[in-house]
Amino acid sequence: MNVTYSELRTRARHSLQGNWGKSVLALIVYGLVGFLIGLLDLIPVVGYIIQLLTSGALSLGLIIFFVGIARQEGPPISEIFGGFSHFIKAFCVYFFMTLFTVLWSLLLIIPGIIAYLSYSQAYYILQDNPDIGALEAIRRSKQLMKGRKWKFFVLNLTFIGWALLALLTFGIGFLWLSPYIFVTQAHFYDEITGRTTPPPHPDSF
Image (cartoon, rainbow, N blue to C red):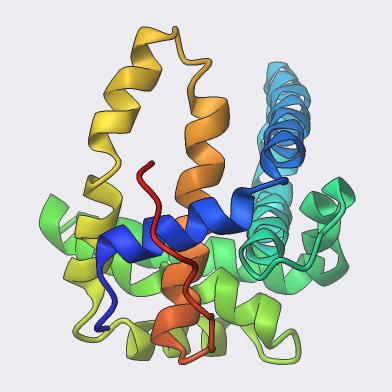
């Protein structure tokens, strides 16, 4: 990956122009759905099972929406539920990613982090290739992230300053920071997969 972290963030801001409001609203809807599902935890066993079953579809839906923003496709907010169209595969990706990460974490925390980074592109791969299986998406993610895990890790670290500022707003700032991070990550995926994305003119943001 030859592009700089700064350029990826610049591409994200360019993609978010005119889409900030929609992105914030999508996160609010996503958060409300997650909150309602979380309330089901009050029901022993049943609540946990529902949360487990829906986590993959919701995660995939969030990826589908923000990839659409990154690619300037004008996705509707309803796309955050798009993962339910691939419910079984999304659940399987979530299940195996969680399982493998936990197993690696049993060794030490560092192997667990490395495993998470290796599997980080699985949802992106699945949304671009809905016909493949969950394990294939994870396998392709591992292959794609060879030699790139550190770059993805550092890319996320570049948002620490913004995260600290968001904390000063009692968390409200994360409604804007989260879309910024998600869209930047989507541009990272498009960059390492060779998808052509014409870079915008740099700005002074």
